[in-house]
Image 1 (cartoon, rainbow, N blue to C red):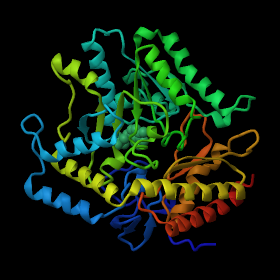
Image 2: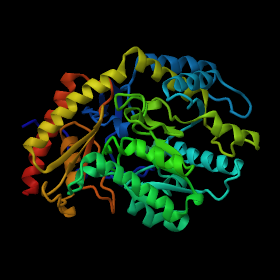
Image 3: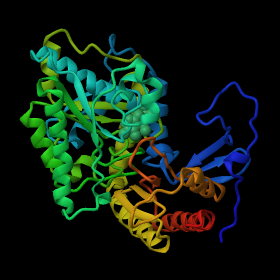
Image 4: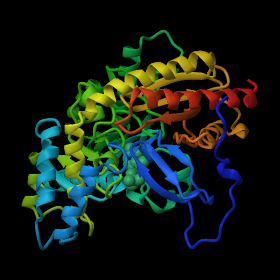
Length: 455
Ligand code: PLP
Protein backbone atom coordinates (compact mmCIF):
# COMPACT_ATOMS: atom_id res chain seq x y z
CA UNK A 1 0.00 0.00 0.00
CA UNK A 2 1.28 3.48 -0.82
CA UNK A 3 2.32 5.57 2.11
CA UNK A 4 -0.18 8.20 3.20
CA UNK A 5 1.61 11.54 3.05
CA UNK A 6 -1.18 14.07 3.51
CA UNK A 7 -3.70 14.44 6.32
CA UNK A 8 -7.35 14.17 5.26
CA UNK A 9 -8.81 17.64 4.71
CA UNK A 10 -11.42 16.98 7.39
CA UNK A 11 -8.76 16.93 10.06
CA UNK A 12 -7.28 20.29 9.17
CA UNK A 13 -7.67 23.19 11.49
CA UNK A 14 -9.94 26.05 10.63
CA UNK A 15 -7.47 28.85 10.71
CA UNK A 16 -8.82 32.36 11.15
CA UNK A 17 -8.91 34.09 7.78
CA UNK A 18 -10.85 36.81 6.03
CA UNK A 19 -11.64 34.39 3.26
CA UNK A 20 -14.46 31.95 3.43
CA UNK A 21 -14.47 28.71 1.57
CA UNK A 22 -16.79 26.53 -0.46
CA UNK A 23 -16.83 23.79 2.16
CA UNK A 24 -15.90 25.90 5.15
CA UNK A 25 -12.64 23.93 5.30
CA UNK A 26 -9.34 25.65 4.95
CA UNK A 27 -7.04 23.90 2.47
CA UNK A 28 -3.26 24.09 2.49
CA UNK A 29 -1.68 27.18 0.96
CA UNK A 30 -0.39 26.65 -2.56
CA UNK A 31 3.24 27.42 -3.14
CA UNK A 32 3.91 26.67 -6.80
CA UNK A 33 2.66 24.56 -9.65
CA UNK A 34 4.42 23.02 -12.60
CA UNK A 35 3.31 20.53 -15.23
CA UNK A 36 0.81 18.18 -13.59
CA UNK A 37 2.03 18.94 -10.05
CA UNK A 38 1.10 21.45 -7.35
CA UNK A 39 3.24 22.02 -4.22
CA UNK A 40 1.94 23.51 -0.99
CA UNK A 41 3.79 25.87 1.33
CA UNK A 42 4.16 23.09 3.88
CA UNK A 43 6.14 21.09 1.34
CA UNK A 44 3.60 18.57 0.08
CA UNK A 45 3.30 17.59 -3.56
CA UNK A 46 -0.02 16.84 -5.24
CA UNK A 47 -0.72 15.39 -8.66
CA UNK A 48 -3.40 17.57 -10.24
CA UNK A 49 -5.33 14.57 -11.48
CA UNK A 50 -8.39 16.59 -12.39
CA UNK A 51 -6.66 19.77 -13.64
CA UNK A 52 -8.44 21.55 -10.78
CA UNK A 53 -12.04 21.44 -11.97
CA UNK A 54 -10.87 20.44 -15.50
CA UNK A 55 -9.16 23.77 -16.13
CA UNK A 56 -5.37 23.37 -16.36
CA UNK A 57 -5.55 21.63 -19.75
CA UNK A 58 -2.02 22.42 -20.90
CA UNK A 59 -0.49 21.97 -17.46
CA UNK A 60 0.85 24.48 -14.96
CA UNK A 61 3.57 27.10 -15.47
CA UNK A 62 4.00 26.64 -19.20
CA UNK A 63 6.95 28.89 -20.00
CA UNK A 64 5.72 30.07 -23.41
CA UNK A 65 2.34 31.08 -22.03
CA UNK A 66 3.92 32.95 -19.13
CA UNK A 67 6.29 34.76 -21.50
CA UNK A 68 3.43 35.74 -23.81
CA UNK A 69 1.51 37.11 -20.83
CA UNK A 70 4.55 39.03 -19.60
CA UNK A 71 5.03 40.58 -23.03
CA UNK A 72 1.37 41.63 -23.04
CA UNK A 73 1.62 42.97 -19.47
CA UNK A 74 4.42 45.28 -20.56
CA UNK A 75 2.15 46.74 -23.24
CA UNK A 76 -1.41 46.91 -21.87
CA UNK A 77 -3.31 44.75 -19.40
CA UNK A 78 -6.65 46.45 -19.90
CA UNK A 79 -8.28 48.61 -22.53
CA UNK A 80 -12.05 48.73 -22.34
CA UNK A 81 -13.86 47.01 -25.16
CA UNK A 82 -16.22 49.90 -25.83
CA UNK A 83 -13.30 52.26 -26.33
CA UNK A 84 -10.64 50.11 -27.99
CA UNK A 85 -10.15 46.91 -29.90
CA UNK A 86 -7.15 44.85 -28.93
CA UNK A 87 -4.94 42.62 -31.01
CA UNK A 88 -4.83 39.56 -28.72
CA UNK A 89 -8.66 39.41 -28.75
CA UNK A 90 -8.75 39.71 -32.55
CA UNK A 91 -6.05 37.06 -32.95
CA UNK A 92 -7.60 34.68 -30.45
CA UNK A 93 -11.03 35.00 -32.08
CA UNK A 94 -9.50 34.15 -35.46
CA UNK A 95 -7.53 31.18 -34.07
CA UNK A 96 -10.55 29.89 -32.22
CA UNK A 97 -12.86 30.21 -35.22
CA UNK A 98 -10.34 28.12 -37.18
CA UNK A 99 -10.71 25.28 -34.66
CA UNK A 100 -14.50 25.33 -34.39
CA UNK A 101 -17.02 23.69 -36.71
CA UNK A 102 -17.40 25.64 -39.94
CA UNK A 103 -19.54 28.72 -39.64
CA UNK A 104 -19.21 29.10 -35.87
CA UNK A 105 -16.90 32.01 -36.47
CA UNK A 106 -18.32 34.99 -34.52
CA UNK A 107 -16.75 35.06 -31.09
CA UNK A 108 -17.77 36.99 -27.96
CA UNK A 109 -15.34 36.82 -25.05
CA UNK A 110 -16.26 36.60 -21.37
CA UNK A 111 -14.34 35.76 -18.19
CA UNK A 112 -15.72 32.38 -17.12
CA UNK A 113 -18.05 29.46 -17.73
CA UNK A 114 -21.23 30.82 -16.16
CA UNK A 115 -20.81 34.04 -18.11
CA UNK A 116 -20.34 31.96 -21.24
CA UNK A 117 -23.51 29.89 -20.87
CA UNK A 118 -25.56 32.93 -19.86
CA UNK A 119 -24.22 34.82 -22.84
CA UNK A 120 -25.37 31.99 -25.13
CA UNK A 121 -28.86 32.16 -23.65
CA UNK A 122 -29.03 35.95 -23.94
CA UNK A 123 -27.77 35.85 -27.51
CA UNK A 124 -30.43 33.28 -28.37
CA UNK A 125 -33.19 35.37 -26.80
CA UNK A 126 -32.12 38.56 -28.54
CA UNK A 127 -31.88 36.72 -31.86
CA UNK A 128 -35.47 35.49 -31.34
CA UNK A 129 -36.67 39.04 -30.66
CA UNK A 130 -34.78 40.45 -33.61
CA UNK A 131 -36.33 37.86 -35.93
CA UNK A 132 -39.94 38.27 -34.81
CA UNK A 133 -40.07 35.25 -32.48
CA UNK A 134 -40.78 37.03 -29.19
CA UNK A 135 -42.83 34.10 -27.89
CA UNK A 136 -39.67 31.97 -27.63
CA UNK A 137 -37.93 32.14 -24.25
CA UNK A 138 -37.81 28.69 -22.65
CA UNK A 139 -34.49 26.88 -22.59
CA UNK A 140 -34.90 23.14 -22.12
CA UNK A 141 -32.08 21.55 -20.17
CA UNK A 142 -31.14 18.09 -18.90
CA UNK A 143 -31.39 16.69 -15.42
CA UNK A 144 -28.86 16.33 -13.92
CA UNK A 145 -26.60 18.93 -15.48
CA UNK A 146 -24.41 21.86 -14.54
CA UNK A 147 -24.24 25.05 -16.56
CA UNK A 148 -22.98 27.53 -13.99
CA UNK A 149 -23.58 29.19 -10.67
CA UNK A 150 -24.95 32.65 -11.51
CA UNK A 151 -28.73 32.91 -11.40
CA UNK A 152 -29.24 32.80 -15.18
CA UNK A 153 -26.92 29.83 -15.65
CA UNK A 154 -28.38 28.18 -12.55
CA UNK A 155 -31.87 28.44 -14.08
CA UNK A 156 -30.74 25.92 -16.71
CA UNK A 157 -28.80 23.76 -14.26
CA UNK A 158 -30.43 20.45 -13.31
CA UNK A 159 -29.59 20.02 -9.62
CA UNK A 160 -32.29 19.94 -6.94
CA UNK A 161 -30.04 21.29 -4.19
CA UNK A 162 -29.28 24.42 -6.16
CA UNK A 163 -32.83 24.80 -7.45
CA UNK A 164 -34.38 24.42 -4.00
CA UNK A 165 -32.26 27.19 -2.56
CA UNK A 166 -32.60 29.73 -5.34
CA UNK A 167 -35.74 28.71 -7.23
CA UNK A 168 -37.88 31.63 -5.94
CA UNK A 169 -35.33 34.04 -7.34
CA UNK A 170 -35.22 32.77 -10.89
CA UNK A 171 -37.19 31.30 -13.78
CA UNK A 172 -36.37 27.61 -13.49
CA UNK A 173 -36.39 26.05 -16.96
CA UNK A 174 -37.98 22.76 -18.13
CA UNK A 175 -35.85 19.63 -17.88
CA UNK A 176 -35.55 16.28 -19.63
CA UNK A 177 -33.64 13.28 -18.27
CA UNK A 178 -29.94 13.13 -19.10
CA UNK A 179 -29.30 10.19 -21.45
CA UNK A 180 -28.16 7.65 -18.86
CA UNK A 181 -28.75 4.83 -21.34
CA UNK A 182 -26.20 2.49 -19.70
CA UNK A 183 -28.43 2.36 -16.61
CA UNK A 184 -31.56 1.21 -18.43
CA UNK A 185 -32.49 -2.39 -17.89
CA UNK A 186 -34.64 -3.14 -20.93
CA UNK A 187 -34.37 -5.07 -24.17
CA UNK A 188 -33.49 -2.10 -26.34
CA UNK A 189 -30.07 -1.58 -27.90
CA UNK A 190 -27.98 1.39 -26.80
CA UNK A 191 -28.72 3.07 -30.14
CA UNK A 192 -32.47 2.64 -29.64
CA UNK A 193 -32.13 4.09 -26.17
CA UNK A 194 -30.23 7.06 -27.57
CA UNK A 195 -33.16 7.80 -29.89
CA UNK A 196 -35.57 7.38 -27.00
CA UNK A 197 -33.73 9.93 -24.84
CA UNK A 198 -33.61 12.40 -27.73
CA UNK A 199 -37.33 11.90 -28.35
CA UNK A 200 -37.97 12.94 -24.75
CA UNK A 201 -36.72 16.37 -25.79
CA UNK A 202 -39.34 16.45 -28.54
CA UNK A 203 -42.03 15.38 -26.08
CA UNK A 204 -40.98 18.18 -23.75
CA UNK A 205 -41.05 20.71 -26.59
CA UNK A 206 -44.59 19.63 -27.49
CA UNK A 207 -45.70 19.74 -23.85
CA UNK A 208 -44.28 23.23 -23.34
CA UNK A 209 -45.58 24.50 -26.69
CA UNK A 210 -43.01 24.64 -29.51
CA UNK A 211 -43.58 28.35 -30.11
CA UNK A 212 -42.44 29.08 -26.54
CA UNK A 213 -39.18 27.12 -26.74
CA UNK A 214 -36.05 29.06 -27.59
CA UNK A 215 -33.21 26.58 -27.11
CA UNK A 216 -32.00 23.24 -25.83
CA UNK A 217 -28.74 23.25 -23.88
CA UNK A 218 -26.52 20.24 -23.22
CA UNK A 219 -22.97 19.18 -22.53
CA UNK A 220 -22.02 16.86 -25.43
CA UNK A 221 -19.68 15.01 -23.04
CA UNK A 222 -21.04 15.45 -19.55
CA UNK A 223 -19.20 17.23 -16.80
CA UNK A 224 -19.45 17.32 -13.04
CA UNK A 225 -23.17 16.57 -12.73
CA UNK A 226 -23.00 13.29 -14.66
CA UNK A 227 -19.31 12.36 -14.34
CA UNK A 228 -18.46 12.45 -18.04
CA UNK A 229 -21.68 10.89 -19.29
CA UNK A 230 -21.72 10.17 -23.01
CA UNK A 231 -24.97 9.39 -24.83
CA UNK A 232 -25.22 6.65 -27.47
CA UNK A 233 -24.16 8.00 -30.90
CA UNK A 234 -27.73 7.94 -32.15
CA UNK A 235 -28.75 10.61 -29.61
CA UNK A 236 -26.83 13.48 -31.15
CA UNK A 237 -28.11 13.62 -34.76
CA UNK A 238 -31.64 13.01 -33.47
CA UNK A 239 -31.32 16.02 -31.16
CA UNK A 240 -30.18 18.14 -34.13
CA UNK A 241 -33.12 16.89 -36.19
CA UNK A 242 -35.61 17.72 -33.44
CA UNK A 243 -34.20 21.21 -32.87
CA UNK A 244 -34.39 21.89 -36.62
CA UNK A 245 -37.94 20.59 -36.80
CA UNK A 246 -39.15 23.16 -34.27
CA UNK A 247 -36.78 26.02 -35.08
CA UNK A 248 -35.05 25.65 -31.71
CA UNK A 249 -31.43 26.63 -31.17
CA UNK A 250 -29.01 23.98 -29.96
CA UNK A 251 -26.52 25.29 -27.41
CA UNK A 252 -23.51 23.10 -26.62
CA UNK A 253 -21.98 23.85 -23.24
CA UNK A 254 -18.34 22.97 -23.89
CA UNK A 255 -17.07 24.81 -20.84
CA UNK A 256 -15.61 21.58 -19.47
CA UNK A 257 -15.50 19.34 -22.54
CA UNK A 258 -14.03 21.92 -24.92
CA UNK A 259 -10.51 23.14 -25.64
CA UNK A 260 -9.12 19.73 -26.56
CA UNK A 261 -9.78 17.83 -23.35
CA UNK A 262 -11.76 15.01 -24.97
CA UNK A 263 -9.18 14.32 -27.68
CA UNK A 264 -10.91 16.59 -30.19
CA UNK A 265 -11.17 20.36 -29.94
CA UNK A 266 -14.83 20.13 -28.92
CA UNK A 267 -16.56 17.28 -27.13
CA UNK A 268 -19.31 17.63 -29.75
CA UNK A 269 -16.78 16.96 -32.54
CA UNK A 270 -17.01 13.26 -31.65
CA UNK A 271 -20.61 13.14 -32.83
CA UNK A 272 -22.75 13.86 -35.86
CA UNK A 273 -24.41 16.99 -34.55
CA UNK A 274 -23.48 20.61 -35.15
CA UNK A 275 -24.59 23.13 -32.51
CA UNK A 276 -25.91 26.62 -33.23
CA UNK A 277 -24.05 28.22 -30.34
CA UNK A 278 -21.08 27.00 -28.29
CA UNK A 279 -19.95 28.07 -24.80
CA UNK A 280 -16.27 27.65 -23.87
CA UNK A 281 -14.16 28.50 -20.84
CA UNK A 282 -11.97 26.51 -18.40
CA UNK A 283 -9.32 24.98 -20.73
CA UNK A 284 -9.43 27.99 -23.04
CA UNK A 285 -7.52 30.04 -20.48
CA UNK A 286 -6.12 26.82 -18.95
CA UNK A 287 -5.83 28.47 -15.54
CA UNK A 288 -3.53 31.24 -16.79
CA UNK A 289 -6.32 33.83 -16.97
CA UNK A 290 -10.09 33.92 -16.43
CA UNK A 291 -11.40 33.49 -19.95
CA UNK A 292 -14.52 32.23 -21.66
CA UNK A 293 -16.17 32.63 -25.03
CA UNK A 294 -19.28 32.03 -27.00
CA UNK A 295 -19.16 31.17 -30.66
CA UNK A 296 -22.09 31.62 -33.02
CA UNK A 297 -22.64 31.92 -36.78
CA UNK A 298 -23.13 35.28 -38.48
CA UNK A 299 -26.76 34.39 -39.23
CA UNK A 300 -27.53 34.56 -35.48
CA UNK A 301 -25.40 37.58 -34.72
CA UNK A 302 -26.36 39.74 -37.69
CA UNK A 303 -30.05 40.29 -36.86
CA UNK A 304 -29.31 41.52 -33.39
CA UNK A 305 -26.49 43.76 -34.48
CA UNK A 306 -28.85 45.22 -37.05
CA UNK A 307 -31.39 45.94 -34.32
CA UNK A 308 -29.30 47.75 -31.72
CA UNK A 309 -26.51 45.32 -30.82
CA UNK A 310 -25.96 42.61 -28.21
CA UNK A 311 -27.40 43.91 -24.94
CA UNK A 312 -24.88 42.14 -22.81
CA UNK A 313 -21.34 42.50 -21.63
CA UNK A 314 -18.97 42.29 -18.72
CA UNK A 315 -16.26 44.77 -17.81
CA UNK A 316 -13.33 42.39 -18.13
CA UNK A 317 -14.62 40.62 -21.24
CA UNK A 318 -12.04 40.32 -23.99
CA UNK A 319 -9.30 42.04 -22.02
CA UNK A 320 -5.91 41.89 -23.72
CA UNK A 321 -4.12 39.98 -20.96
CA UNK A 322 -6.65 37.13 -20.77
CA UNK A 323 -6.79 36.94 -24.56
CA UNK A 324 -2.98 36.90 -24.86
CA UNK A 325 -2.99 33.98 -22.41
CA UNK A 326 -5.70 32.17 -24.39
CA UNK A 327 -3.84 32.72 -27.65
CA UNK A 328 -0.64 31.30 -26.19
CA UNK A 329 -2.56 28.35 -24.72
CA UNK A 330 -3.93 27.44 -28.15
CA UNK A 331 -0.43 27.90 -29.58
CA UNK A 332 1.01 25.44 -27.06
CA UNK A 333 -1.80 23.00 -27.68
CA UNK A 334 -0.80 22.96 -31.35
CA UNK A 335 2.97 23.02 -30.81
CA UNK A 336 2.92 20.11 -28.37
CA UNK A 337 0.16 18.24 -30.21
CA UNK A 338 -1.76 18.02 -26.97
CA UNK A 339 -5.12 17.10 -28.42
CA UNK A 340 -3.60 13.96 -29.93
CA UNK A 341 -1.91 13.25 -26.59
CA UNK A 342 -5.25 13.67 -24.79
CA UNK A 343 -6.77 11.09 -27.14
CA UNK A 344 -3.89 8.64 -26.73
CA UNK A 345 -3.43 9.02 -22.97
CA UNK A 346 -7.21 9.04 -22.56
CA UNK A 347 -7.41 5.58 -24.14
CA UNK A 348 -4.73 4.29 -21.78
CA UNK A 349 -6.37 5.85 -18.73
CA UNK A 350 -9.77 4.52 -19.76
CA UNK A 351 -8.35 0.98 -20.08
CA UNK A 352 -6.70 1.30 -16.66
CA UNK A 353 -9.92 2.54 -15.04
CA UNK A 354 -11.81 -0.35 -16.62
CA UNK A 355 -9.19 -2.62 -15.07
CA UNK A 356 -9.96 -1.08 -11.69
CA UNK A 357 -13.67 -1.66 -12.31
CA UNK A 358 -12.92 -5.37 -12.73
CA UNK A 359 -10.98 -5.37 -9.45
CA UNK A 360 -13.65 -3.40 -7.62
CA UNK A 361 -17.09 -4.52 -8.84
CA UNK A 362 -18.82 -1.64 -7.05
CA UNK A 363 -17.57 0.48 -9.97
CA UNK A 364 -20.54 -0.06 -12.27
CA UNK A 365 -19.54 2.16 -15.18
CA UNK A 366 -16.45 3.86 -16.60
CA UNK A 367 -17.06 6.45 -19.30
CA UNK A 368 -16.04 9.63 -21.04
CA UNK A 369 -13.85 10.71 -23.94
CA UNK A 370 -10.15 11.49 -24.08
CA UNK A 371 -9.00 12.89 -20.75
CA UNK A 372 -12.48 13.67 -19.47
CA UNK A 373 -13.25 10.39 -17.74
CA UNK A 374 -15.62 9.38 -14.99
CA UNK A 375 -16.63 6.30 -13.04
CA UNK A 376 -19.79 5.52 -11.14
CA UNK A 377 -19.90 3.53 -7.91
CA UNK A 378 -22.97 1.66 -6.63
CA UNK A 379 -23.72 -0.83 -3.86
CA UNK A 380 -24.98 -3.47 -6.28
CA UNK A 381 -23.86 -3.42 -9.93
CA UNK A 382 -26.76 -5.66 -11.00
CA UNK A 383 -29.60 -3.62 -9.59
CA UNK A 384 -27.63 -0.34 -9.47
CA UNK A 385 -28.77 0.13 -5.90
CA UNK A 386 -26.86 3.19 -4.68
CA UNK A 387 -24.35 3.17 -1.84
CA UNK A 388 -26.00 4.45 1.36
CA UNK A 389 -25.63 8.27 1.33
CA UNK A 390 -24.44 8.18 4.96
CA UNK A 391 -21.25 6.47 3.75
CA UNK A 392 -20.37 9.54 1.66
CA UNK A 393 -18.44 7.28 -0.71
CA UNK A 394 -17.55 10.01 -3.23
CA UNK A 395 -16.12 12.36 -0.61
CA UNK A 396 -14.34 9.52 1.16
CA UNK A 397 -12.63 8.43 -2.05
CA UNK A 398 -11.60 12.00 -2.82
CA UNK A 399 -10.16 12.33 0.69
CA UNK A 400 -8.28 9.04 0.45
CA UNK A 401 -6.70 10.11 -2.83
CA UNK A 402 -5.94 13.56 -1.41
CA UNK A 403 -4.17 11.99 1.57
CA UNK A 404 -2.02 10.12 -0.94
CA UNK A 405 -1.16 13.24 -2.92
CA UNK A 406 -3.66 12.96 -5.76
CA UNK A 407 -6.47 15.36 -6.65
CA UNK A 408 -9.46 13.73 -8.34
CA UNK A 409 -12.90 15.22 -8.79
CA UNK A 410 -16.36 14.13 -7.73
CA UNK A 411 -19.72 15.60 -7.02
CA UNK A 412 -23.02 14.07 -6.00
CA UNK A 413 -26.03 15.82 -7.46
CA UNK A 414 -29.13 16.04 -5.30
CA UNK A 415 -32.08 14.39 -6.98
CA UNK A 416 -29.80 13.15 -9.74
CA UNK A 417 -29.92 9.65 -11.13
CA UNK A 418 -26.21 9.14 -10.56
CA UNK A 419 -24.70 7.00 -7.87
CA UNK A 420 -21.47 8.07 -6.25
CA UNK A 421 -18.92 9.02 -8.83
CA UNK A 422 -15.44 10.32 -9.42
CA UNK A 423 -13.70 11.94 -12.35
CA UNK A 424 -10.13 11.72 -13.53
CA UNK A 425 -8.96 14.43 -15.92
CA UNK A 426 -5.25 15.22 -15.67
CA UNK A 427 -3.64 17.94 -17.79
CA UNK A 428 -3.29 17.03 -21.45
CA UNK A 429 0.53 16.90 -21.12
CA UNK A 430 0.26 13.80 -18.92
CA UNK A 431 2.62 10.92 -19.72
CA UNK A 432 2.14 7.14 -19.52
CA UNK A 433 4.32 6.98 -16.40
CA UNK A 434 2.27 9.67 -14.71
CA UNK A 435 -0.93 7.83 -15.62
CA UNK A 436 0.47 4.72 -13.93
CA UNK A 437 1.19 6.78 -10.83
CA UNK A 438 -2.34 8.23 -10.84
CA UNK A 439 -3.96 4.83 -11.33
CA UNK A 440 -1.86 3.27 -8.55
CA UNK A 441 -3.08 5.89 -6.07
CA UNK A 442 -6.71 5.52 -7.18
CA UNK A 443 -6.40 1.72 -6.85
CA UNK A 444 -4.93 2.06 -3.39
CA UNK A 445 -7.67 4.50 -2.34
CA UNK A 446 -10.38 2.23 -3.74
CA UNK A 447 -8.91 -0.67 -1.80
CA UNK A 448 -9.30 1.24 1.46
CA UNK A 449 -12.76 2.45 0.46
CA UNK A 450 -13.86 -1.11 -0.42
CA UNK A 451 -12.90 -2.23 3.08
CA UNK A 452 -14.78 0.62 4.68
CA UNK A 453 -17.91 0.22 2.56
CA UNK A 454 -18.11 -3.48 3.29
CA UNK A 455 -20.63 -4.05 0.51
N1 PLP B 1 -20.70 24.83 -17.61
C1 PLP B 1 -20.07 23.68 -17.31
C2 PLP B 1 -20.29 22.46 -18.14
C3 PLP B 1 -19.22 23.63 -16.20
O1 PLP B 1 -18.61 22.48 -15.89
C4 PLP B 1 -19.03 24.80 -15.43
C5 PLP B 1 -18.17 24.77 -14.23
O2 PLP B 1 -17.83 23.76 -13.70
C6 PLP B 1 -19.70 25.97 -15.79
C7 PLP B 1 -20.52 25.95 -16.90
C8 PLP B 1 -19.51 27.22 -15.00
O3 PLP B 1 -18.22 27.71 -15.13
P1 PLP B 1 -17.61 28.74 -14.08
O4 PLP B 1 -17.44 28.00 -12.80
O5 PLP B 1 -16.30 29.15 -14.71
O6 PLP B 1 -18.55 29.88 -13.98
